[in-house]
Image (cartoon, rainbow, N blue to C red; front, side, top):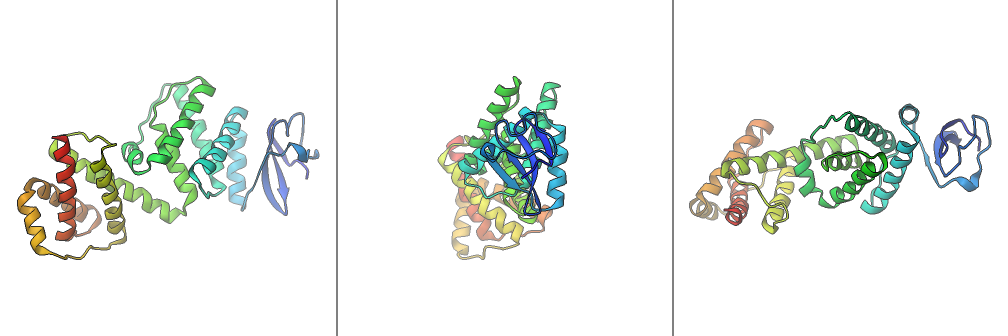
Length: 278
């Protein structure tokens, strides 16, 4: 193989079976130029770019960012694939590199942005969030900067995007937003904050995950026991009233009409998490 382009001392571009590929290895591009032979013994990582669009995006980003940033991105992706058992698209390299470069630059300029879904990502994808917190620490230490832990949420979304096709990812983002809004309705209705590690709150979030999927797919849970619905409505009046508010929100925003049975299950969960808090 010969070098088509040198990104830095450790990363070069080449061709494999007619497709462009990025090679990563310590010193693989040191004092090299286009047309030089590649020392195969220095190849530590190789990923083939499946189409011209991927290739152009990656080349454009890698030309813009520093050697330290490129190396960090490659290390993060390798670690994430192992830690989170991901099967991801090569598109992650360009999107994550661009994001990390932007985060580092704006952090150096003291520009802080909040991830609007940070709280929800933390309790919907807790394992992924913990892994990505590690990458935030890597960025802090390597570039001697301070940044908010919420940056981990954005990295989680990048990996979810790379693992799923665009349609599925858009659905995931919508489901996450719906969960956020439903939790916010309960939070505001009761005027309380929740302990995210609380067992009943975790159960509530799990219930909302399945519920949000049904909303997005327009699947309504059929009524089973009207008597039980009436019992819950009577015994858990405030919780049921809160569930009705969630139902109205879903009807207005998603044109989804929740069944009495769905409202009943919501009310039961709301009763449990608010009893613990109050």
